[in-house]
Length: 333
Image (cartoon, rainbow, N blue to C red):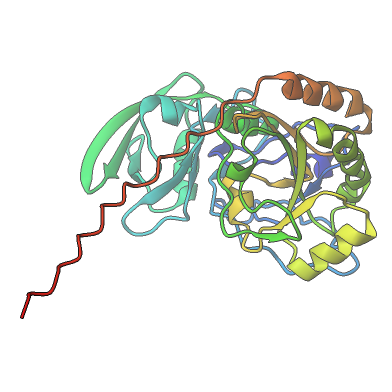
């Protein structure tokens, strides 16, 4: 169980070290993604379900080094796999050492701590050879202009904490390339003024099946008070609809076929739930299904529902219509 729990707690949104926190009371299904960066270090994939779904679109490569060392140094970036001109930063974790030092999404890492970086694994090794609190020089290219910044490495947080620090307190990311089933909302912006519980799920996820009836009950109990429950899945529309009907998912279902929205939210284990307030700000992230956590979840929802909704966005006045020109009288003959 220890190895399985390590896998379920691995959140691959930040360069640093893989998470190793094990929680025995929470049911989690890891997404079938490889650990990129260090060839041969990915843990064995979990046993596939009886009818395995098509593999989702692979997530961008993330530099990872072996876990288990105390006070692992952490940079806090998500990167592409690299090329002969450097490694491109695809995401910077909020509050991470990289963000504090000024690293931005789109920067190309040229050298890290004096090591030329042509692959994410080289960034990993350069960071892993230092200690927490060390300062490292990062040479990067931004919009064609070279620059060098100094990053002070911090201790890598647990995987859940990385996801929370990246999302909690920030506006919920927009949904990209999704298809709404039935009357489900097609964007998070449509739900401004309501409390939203977003659940990332899949038909092959065992804990998701246990959670679905509970989410339906929450929707029935609090829907009239301003709660919207939305399930987002990378399953195809037909499979999602059949599953939702079979498991009585009486809330909106959104299909994220290419996984773009799931990646935007940093989802790497299922189920992953987010509580979003009436202003569209993420207030909490819950990973896995904990049957003992129902009371805490309800308390959080009641708190958010009691908050004042933001005023509606002003409706711009209609554009002034210029008067029609006066009709010209034909000349007299």
